Image 1 (tube, rainbow, N blue to C red):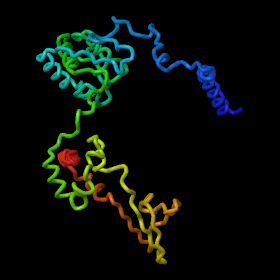
Image 2: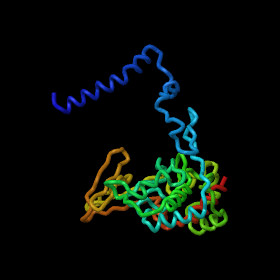
Image 3: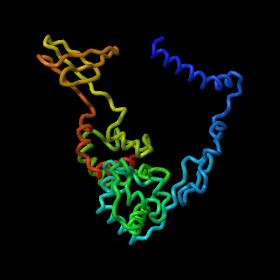
Image 4: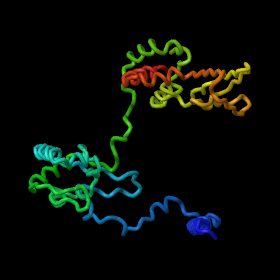
Length: 299
């Protein structure tokens, strides 16, 4: 047996050993519910209360996410001094101006050493002596200066998740009248609020989906292509691919054909979404917000 086959055989045995108990339970009709498995947590694996950072509360069993760290009350004067030191000493180059990490340095936002710190006592040795075999060197700073830097670090809110990823309550933030004006100047040649777009907001009640729909819909019709050979034979179909070397198309019967570009071959591509695709590079944020605010009124 080759080495690769031995590895495959070993992996197969491992998978069978893992799956065997659950398969046997299912055959016997006694498969344990997923909820029971999720609650089987070894208490010895949980951290002790005294080991937790100040202000942190253990999550309630079954909670979707851990609670946020309680925001600290910081001294504005110390924060200002610490921010100045953080900049002038070059700390922000490695750790970033928002302490989320910079040029090679780790994020300090959720560093356990920073979270457990109160007034610079846990980071004092690291700041003044550095970290061996790393780019972190020691700085000639007093304990008071390190406390100022610590206060600056503590001024950043820390959450159990990245709050910047939270979706806004609504994406409808534009001016509907301005959107109507933009629509009249740029879109009314092909679309009508009382024609093809009548009831648009009813068909797409979620503004996010509606905005995606008008910007560039995934359901938009595919471009069609007509290829005329040197002999005059014409082949038509749905465009599959076109580049500087060849064009490929899907025929009505589902088969595909490709043609090498060049010579007397003539290719005509008709893309119903061409204007929308080209316009993506020209919309301003206000254009997008305003048009969406107008389109949500078409119910």
